[in-house]
Every structure is written in C-alpha cells, then in structure tokens.
Image (cartoon, rainbow, N blue to C red; front, side, top):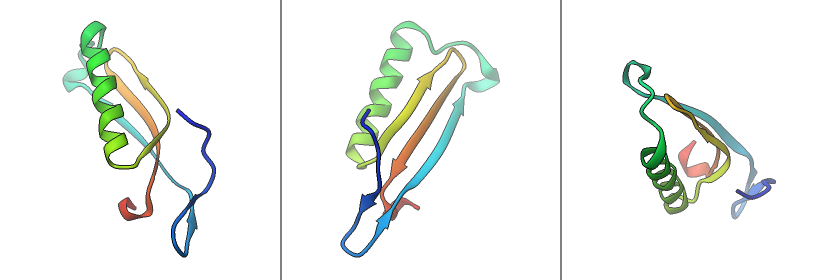
Length: 75
C-alpha cells in the first residue's frame, strides 16, 4: 500500500475511491489459512493489472473489505 494523493491525467486531477465489500455465500467462514492468502494475492494482482491502488483492505473469515483508488476510466 502507498500513501495516496490526487491522481493526474493529461488535463485532469482526480481522486476517485470506492469502498468494496464481498461476502461469502451464506456468510460461511471459509476465508482462512491458504484460501485467505490466495484471495489476498489474487486481489493484489488484479488491482496491479488494472492500475487500481489499494488504499486499505482486510480479509475476514466471511467477507473482504477494500478501499481502492481507481483511474478515471473506471468511474
């Protein structure tokens, strides 16, 4: 994670953030151990590919919280 400030385009300055929450089906506590590590790594890889910065995130037993800063193309 890195400290975020405004992001800049060719003619714009912006700060678009989304709070995303995923829950497991029936809120079953399955996100533990190797599964949690794998999900965390998949989220990091996907965000890096899409130029999305993870401001903060947390993987709990039955849900995932993410606060992400996205490019203006994803608004």
